Image 1 (tube, rainbow, N blue to C red):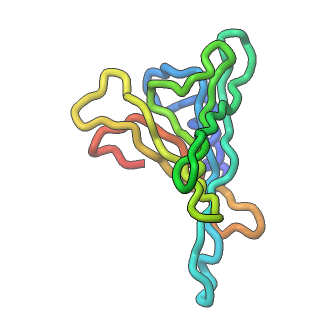
Image 2 (tube, rainbow, N blue to C red):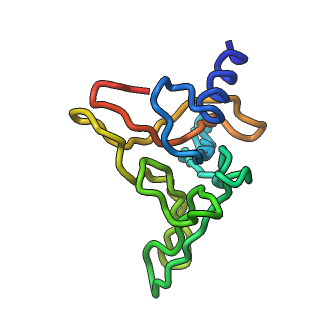
Length: 157
């Protein structure tokens, strides 16, 4: 069962097997790890990992993380990361995931948010965050692959 789940995750993440028309050549995904779920003496906590990119650019190079550092004084959004190609390193307009880093006092907070439009959106269709559970490494209670997809209001994944 775990093998079948892992193959499904690889299929969706690497190839985009959702059965939808694939517009973008790059696809972002990130791991979300949960810790201390079974420890009654600690509050559960989650951590987003590094941004991963899949896909091939028009020049046959691999998609790579693109970074925009924001010149923000004080608290707020200080960095955005998404996957892109050398021919167009700007943040895409289509549905995609963005790893965002915020400063709050002396802490850095990482989030993964969905941005962009869906092609020819149907009624209620929007760019939404999808979590698919996968095998967790040692020291992690649960691990999810997180990415963004265009989904209608009744679709749940």
